[in-house]
Each structure stands twice: as structure tokens, then as C-alpha cells.
Image (cartoon, rainbow, N blue to C red; front, side, top):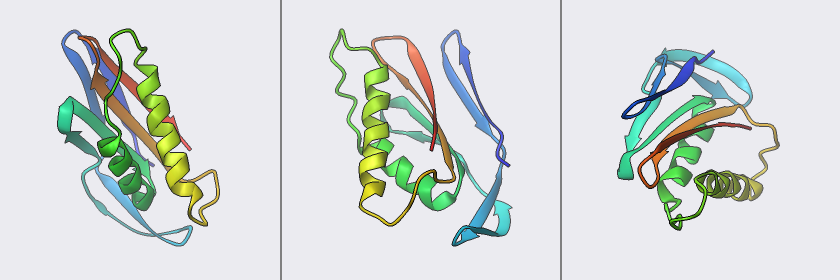
Length: 121
């Protein structure tokens, strides 16, 4: 079981997670090993995932390719909605049923303040 935490600090957001990764064969856990779950992406975005690493990789790709095109007066939650919709659209073209074994956390800056969001599928 992954433990991931996000802390809002005076000068940003800190995300931390444990290092145990579980590989799956189908829906069954197959093996455990250590791996990296927290990643610093472009534009000062921090991404962490838990659950099935296959879905975590897809989710990370969607986070990386979803542009931060927030207008000055747009609420930052709109960015997380676009990511959520991108994940749903991506998985809709597969035979993957919901819910899936995936949790992800992102942190990003918008107009100065830092924000974080936890996704559960």
C-alpha cells in the first residue's frame, strides 16, 4: 500500500511517497520492488502515483501533455478538471473498466500560489 502525502509550505508544495512498487499480471499483484513514485515535470509540476504502475504511467503522460492554459481569472481547479477528463477519455478507448487501481497527486503553481490535487479512480 502506497503512502503519499502533500504538504503546503510557505514557499510551495512538498510531495513525498514510499518507494515500494507492485507489478501486476492482469488484476493480480505479481511482484514487489523499489521504484520512484514522485517526479518533477516541466513547468514546476510535481506528480506522484500509487496503484497499478501501468495506469500511473498513462496518467503521468496526460499530466505532461495537458497544457497549463489557465486564463488569469480562471480558478486552478479547471486545470485538474482537464486532467481528469483527459484520463477518462484516454481509458474510454480501452477495455479497462472503472474503477481502476490508481491514485495520483499533482502540485502546480498558478499566478503565484501553489496548488495540489489528489485523484482517485
